[in-house]
Image (cartoon, rainbow, N blue to C red; front, side, top):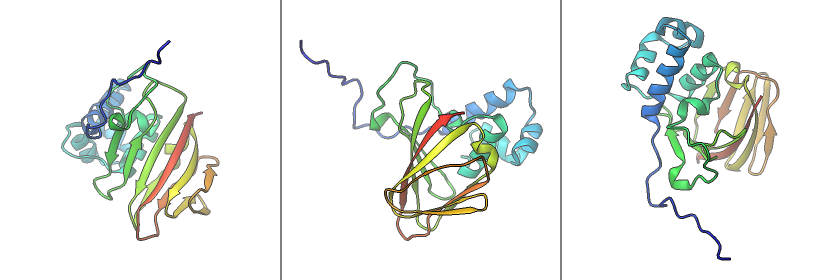
Length: 198
């Protein structure tokens, strides 16, 4: 019997930009909870003006802002970055993977895993030279994470602990704590994050 080859997606397409979906997701999550913009602003520690701009698609939120919003909603960050749910798809080709870039730092987040609602999620991060990204502990409450460095050096501040990770090093995160990802080098740092819902 001949093997079946899946050629349903072209590798020549540009990465998908989820900016429009972020705006819609933030608004939907806020309204579904019956929260005003002011209430979300208070819960997330993000200004009401910024939330309004994000929901109207007038501003692309930074990685730090997205981390605060996801923590306030009790969701994984990936939920806010989803363009659409593609249940049933077990293959996600590189050209179809959602790529989001932080407008402030150039930090890039590629959602590698198929969008089929699975428990495991793989995310590739590119942290530019001399950049640091901080998240509150609330961004880590709903998931277990491991970090695997692929290129460069990553300094990871986990509460009071500081980990210096080199190529090939893999770190399992501990209990939720404020975290900061730092690239102290002059070249981009690339690392893979594996997430499992708690």
